[in-house]
Image 1 (cartoon, rainbow over the protein chains, first blue to last red):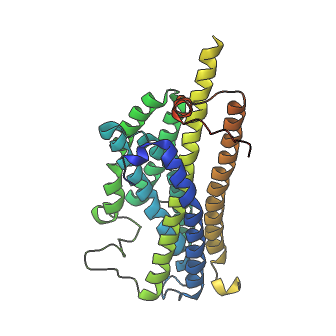
Image 2: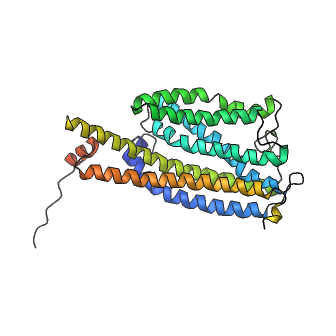
Image 3: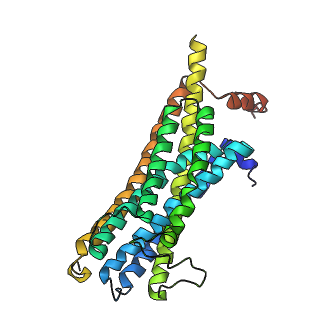
Length: 242
Length: 70
């Protein structure tokens, strides 16, 4: 099945209906394995048991950016290819991305208090992630404000693409500026600096979160298609009543 | 068990609690929204409202053959 085939919402709904139960099962299995590995993972020699917050915080932070990346590709789909499901994908991803970003901010604060002595610092990494969260909220508000989905889709797509400038800022903020946040320790040119005993549970938890994102995104896209069908039927009914 | 998490157990448990609330909250939102939308769509279709594509598909579909008494 190609992207062109998936442009048909009915075909997409059928595919989503088949995939969602499998993805949900995969998510549960990955979380079960991941949490079992987290429980068995060693404490850090400096941070002690507090390092366990990493297995939640880091995947949430990665997914906050991955979700925005999905929205950016969808925005291109709306503006360049005019794919009928592109705006559906972007709109469905926004609340999920906002939640993952909020989770990254909350768990980061909860990790920061015992390790840095503060819940919050206006440094480059923390502030740029807060900006990402505000971008998500702004986009959700924009979609809700403009009633016509076509006009709303174009406006949101432009705003999403403008917001992508924040992604490299988030990623490289720890290298470009002095921040409390530690530099990258997994995605590095010279390889991860984390011990395998911690890297493995982190990787499994990251896959579990990614599977959760895929499941929720497909389900939210399915809902968005149904919402648009209901809107179209409502307009038909209103037109017939005149 | 909690004591084994050291002096910052509260921070660790709160983090995992927040993750559980986020994951379950999103799942609940998606499931309940789907149920509500399906009910609304079914109610509209019960009133005789159908999508243009569904109407044209019905027009193009071959008629169901009638059962013949044997």
